Image 1 (cartoon, rainbow, N blue to C red):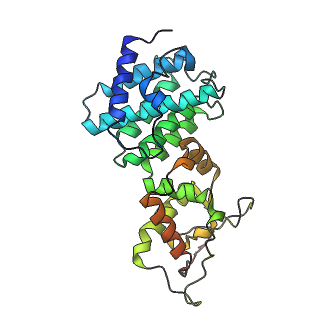
Image 2: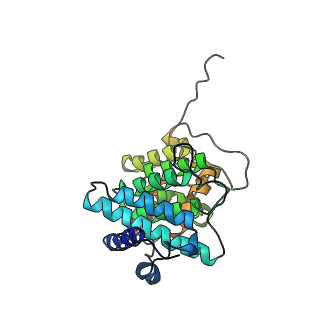
Length: 286
């Protein structure tokens, strides 16, 4: 199927915009940047039409130049990932995801728009490549239902790039050899104030169900995180939702040599040698 003029125009726009941002991953392959892997039968007509229609609607809005660049790069990343999926034999989902509803919009339309908006509004532009990967993965994985897709998009949009790094670290926590924190006063002093923002961010990931504190990945018991003082780097594990988000953002590709990642690992290592504060749970009267 020949690419439509509208689709080809959007692809050329996206490629031009993508080059304006430095990516959080290794970047887009030469083939993806010079050919159109998306518009055509190769990856599914329904999927092609969805990105063509919704992507054009988004970029035709009055966006700031950098917003245009983020949307363009997210589209190119999504297309590149979809091409990789196709080469592995994966096909666009056929569970009604692309079928129009009573209002003429499909779940794919809503998800595509939400994902491109997440990329557009990402001031931390290192996140854009991962958000593009999320769109591609949602489009081929039938086991991720529509409400869950919106949860993943909302989390990806609202979390910081350091939170992305924390998820990558939590996914391989046993490789770092962090020590278990003990209570302050038992030979250790409490964490210094400059560690508190990191502790708050980990606590927020725990509160939102992305990270849990467990002794091992196989353990069925988890530790309560009452406030940020309870954070223990050695016990950070991805929850079920956290693992789903990690995998579909493809955070394994997050650059371990990046300054944010390296600093986060260093702070977690130092935090693991700081004493924990004392949390008191007042159960009250039931």
